[in-house]
Image 1 (cartoon, rainbow, N blue to C red):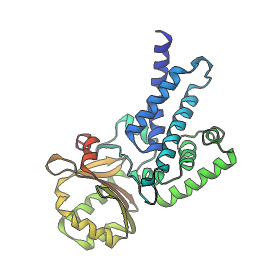
Image 2 (cartoon, rainbow, N blue to C red; image 1 turned 90 degrees about the horizontal axis):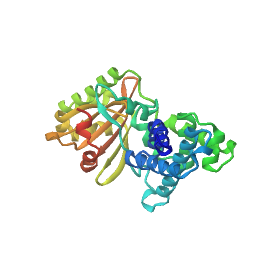
Image 3 (cartoon, one colour; image 1 turned 120 degrees about the horizontal axis):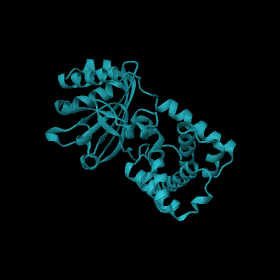
Length: 292
């Protein structure tokens, strides 16, 4: 094995971790792959013999690449003024369970709602929170990436942590119980039972949706229940799925995905629904194949 092959083999040992970092930071599976590939290019051009901690070096490089991408997004006019500028890519799996790579990409955090909230953080806040709180990178190392002092970096992570806690509470850990609540939601919608729909929804539920017209947000059990009744005709075409490790569905009449819904269930009620209703995007993600 020559030196380049040896270096490539070492890099492959870190690839899954690097993609998990990039996915958490960017919310895009394709951009995460691009960031990891760029890290390999930079490693192949570096003096690898002078790198004492390859994993730490690669994590720093990928994080800086992602930070540049996040800043570029934030600078675009179309990415301002909208509380939901873009719905992140979901990690889709059959209802039976995640594969090992998906589990690694989730890095222990379950639910698409977290990824949605991360999209709304300022780039340095997102870097600080994800690297420190999710991947246990020391604040001193994170500070070098965001070009702040360690104390200022702690404040960035603290602000992000509060927002995540307030807006993306983790779902109930019992996946079977989650699925029962989701099934009850669709049964009530299918039967046109408004009261049963309201009963399964938290009074303060948030529905975040992305479709061809853009993104939107509605709140409240009665409003969301009324919205659910408008797509009740699609409920027979629901395929149970895991969306970022939590209960969700892909809606696919005729075998073609038209929407995806991720549910956050807490205390036996739905507290959040995150939906993507962009058929072309779902097709590109291989939504139907991913959950069967």
